[in-house]
Length: 209
Image 1 (tube, helix red, strand yellow):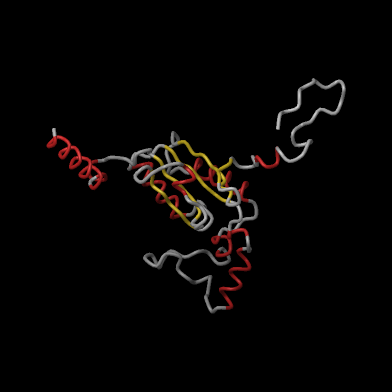
Image 2 (image 1 turned 30 degrees about the horizontal axis):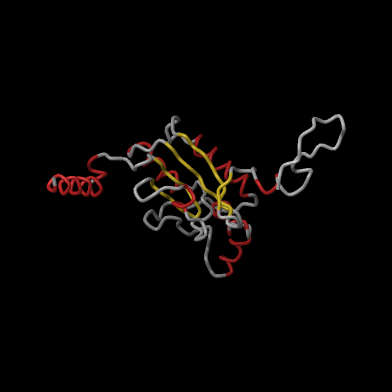
């Protein structure tokens, strides 16, 4: 009956608006750590929709103090049971070193050894000489992805039963892959395809075009 349909919609609307008060987790009990790059469409990459996940984005998709803060809250208090890290190719965090960026800031008149890293907590400052490391640039996106997974798995603030996985978004192909598993490297040459070159090798018919 019509009133039942209306009541159902109103109930769903109330549950959506009051999720935190009602203790309702996100739909997939998922927290995503991803880079802020505009070429990384998190929902499209994972095939998820609005309401499915808590999504945290920063420069590089890296485990920072604020990322840990959010991961702790979502897993300890909001019912999240899975974490996915998404890094991506051609990331801007690979284009310069932390030392170079610090040098540029110094030339712009910023005292990196005295600046507060949290405006709301002016007492929270980095030890002298640590600012360049705090920026967290990197040189290998596959390596850094696996490292972020490791950092999250080892954090005492995140329950050990939370499943943590990392993927790479290829901006050049618009698709996800596992770290160090580049499909393009398996299809371009006979060597990549493990072509048989000896008569003693097992005989396989060539694949059709």
